[in-house]
Image 1 (cartoon, rainbow, N blue to C red):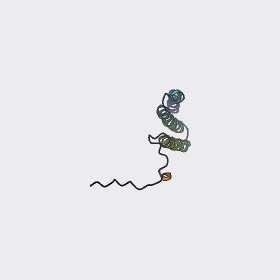
Image 2: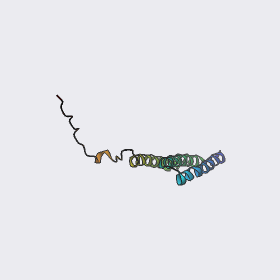
Image 3: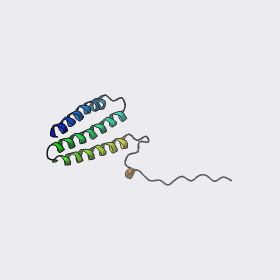
Image 4: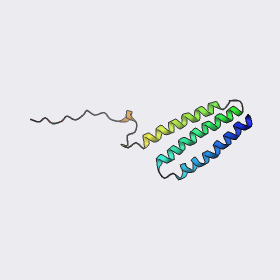
Length: 103
């Protein structure tokens, strides 16, 4: 069983090579971010497979990697939002303008 899990982890690592190539050569920033998310997901899967093959001691590493991948996605969306909005807590709140009265 251990050999099977290590073989699967090796195949996952090989597939991550394609994702890393897309991160390096991606035509658009969104393509690079999606590939980075794939690297995070594949990394979590690899670490979990290796943890199952050994003594499950690496499950904490997998959880931290999953958390970092999620934070990376949030940071990317905040940095590349269409209106350029950053942290909503830093934005100034203004009262809506009143429409002129007719008539």
